[in-house]
Image 1 (cartoon, rainbow, N blue to C red):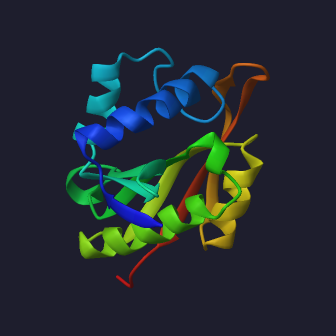
Image 2: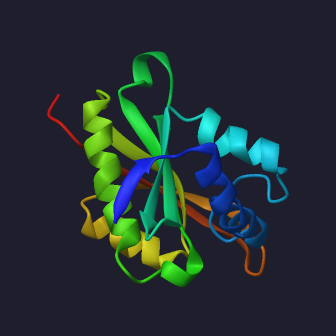
Length: 163
């Protein structure tokens, strides 16, 4: 697996997965019908950095990293991860999360927080816990799932460096 910073060409390959993921309304609290341009801004321009993982020059997943808050809260970062469906179950999300933690430390972050892990996303919850993230809160009915209606959102946190 080769993880590199995203290029416009990489995003073009990743776009169908992002578009489908948002439209499904199962995991992300982003507008489900974003245009290509708005999605590029959201996934590639707004974050501090965005990466893709490739196998044989094919994009298999992506993540972004950005400050979770500004000013006095800017030492905590936030990330979002998506793996292309046909490549799930191969350890890509774990590899992306581990990579993001290394990048976070390089960028000067001391901790990482996930603001809204959808409670029905059992795979992500299991993986984040395995990688040392703790549940620090729950937003009752904080996510409107396409099929299940209102479900809880989980807030998770991991300290990356002593401070």
